[in-house]
Length: 138
Image (cartoon, rainbow, N blue to C red; front, top):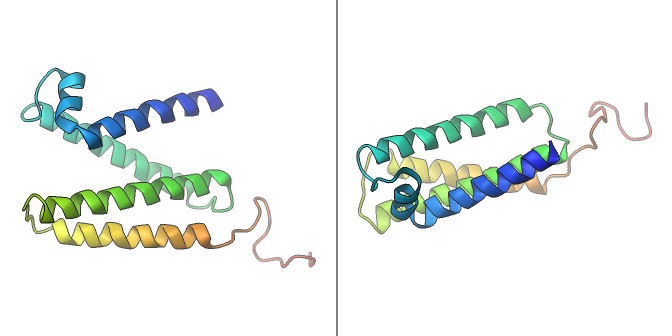
């Protein structure tokens, strides 16, 4: 399982960097079609599936806050939220895009990033420890 997770992490991060850095070139390489219909629709669906997967991972880890895995997940969420807020902010400021959900999405991802930082800075109980029992009492 460790090898699976490491290989998947490397492949998906590499693909993510390519899509974030040069989306048109990455889509042309992956799908053999320029970014636009139908490649844009396929890419949107793949990204939608990625967000569903991210949500599922968060849901599954919601009660496992003391593990290193949960910490890693929150660190990944921090990277995602900072990137999403930055890219959406650039879409508005740099590209002049102006959908009604654009600024609310920038604000939401910024707030979630701050929340991630707060969670990463907060000491967590050791895995398996009962949070209702104080150290030395038990």
